[in-house]
Image (cartoon, rainbow, N blue to C red; front, side, top):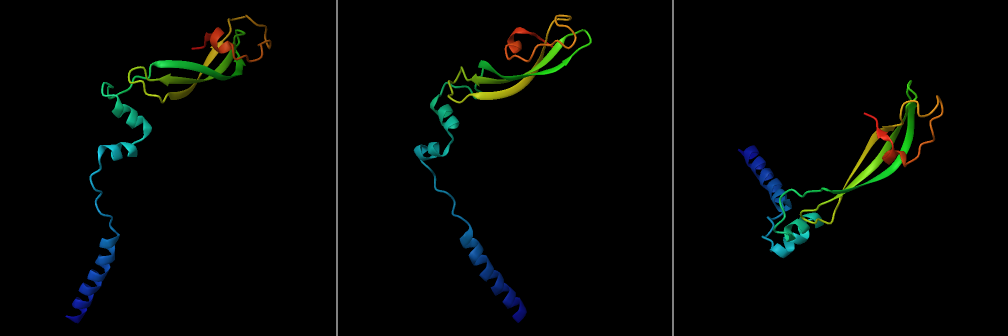
Length: 134
């Protein structure tokens, strides 16, 4: 019996510090306080009541970052890879934060446009002037 009483007391003593360590449930916050806790993007969406749930990031521009020579094909086609960043803004909700997407694609010269081993040095303008290599 004494042993059972000791375990009961030990359990009660251990439970008191654990209960004190649990934080109290947060009090209900006013809308002003809860909007401060949100990130800027969520706050911007809250301020625009006519904004749909999904923003439409369709106002985009492309920046070519770099280009590199890949190879020359047997038909003398010069192949290059273009690296780009697309920056898109929301045109529906007018959210101020753009999305950035990085990507690559290949471009090529015309067959036999350049002699074997005569591919021009990579030029960033090729990304917009050469044909896309599918």
